[in-house]
Length: 343
Image (tube, rainbow, N blue to C red; front, top):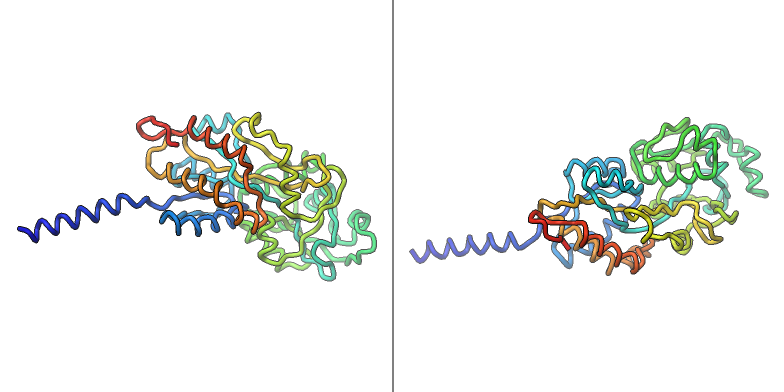
C-alpha cells in the first residue's frame, strides 16, 4: 500500500513537473531574420528551457502558416495592411531591423569596390543590361576594369520579404520596373535564375560566374560574398553597415503608422542605406494555447537582452520607445482563451 502511494506520488510529481515546463514555441517565415532568431533562440533556451523551432521558409509561406494556425507566430519582412490583419484576426509587431545588399561574383572586382544604383539594377533585372561592361555600369565605375561578361540575375524563387524590400527599392527608383514588375513578396521576374531562401540566392551567386543577387547583410558576411556599394536617395554611394541601417530607420514614425507597418526603403538622409527592412512577427489576437504567452516572453527577452547579438550580426535592435509601444499593443490586442489580456 505504501509502495502504491509512493508510485502514485512520483507519477503525480512527474506530471506536475512536465506541465510546469513550457512547450517549445514554433515560428515560420522570414529568412531575412533567421540568423538573429537562431542566435536569440540558442541563448534564450539556456535561460528559460524553452526552445524555438523556426522555419526560414520565406515571408509568403510564413504568412500562410500563421493564417492556417500551424505555427505560434509568423514572420514577414513585408508588413500586412490593417485590413488584411483584421480580416484574419491578426496583429503584427516589429522585431528586428537590417539591410539587404547586392552581391556579385565578378572576377577582378574587390568586395565593396563596384558601385550600383537603383536604375541600373532595375535594368539588369529587366534584362535591358546584359553585360558587365555596359556603359551604364561603366559610367558609375570609372577606373574599374569591367569584363565583357554576361550578367546572370539571381532572384528568390519563393515568396520572400527580402524580395519585397528589393523590388520596393527598384520600383521606387525605376518607373519602368514599377510598371512591368512592381513590388511584392513574389513577382514575375523577366530574366534570371531563382534560388530558395537567402541561402539559395547566396549559393547560386557563389556558383555562377558573372552573377548578381540580393541577400540579407548577415548572409553576405557569413558566406564571405562580394557586396556592392549602393546609391541612396541623397545620391551618396554607401557601404552597408549597421549605422547606415539605423539612419534609414531613424525618421520612421512608428506611432502614426497603422499596425507598425513601417517600410524604411529608400529613405532620405546622406547616411541612409537604401534597402533597409523590418521583420514583423504575426500572431492571432485570440490565443487558444499557452504558447502565445511564451512567444511574447521570448520577444520581450530579445528586446531586453538581444541587442548585443543583433549588433554582432549587423542587425539593428528596435529602439526602446518602439518596444514600449509594442508591449502596449500586446496588452490591448492579445487575449487568452478566457478573454483576458495575454500580457
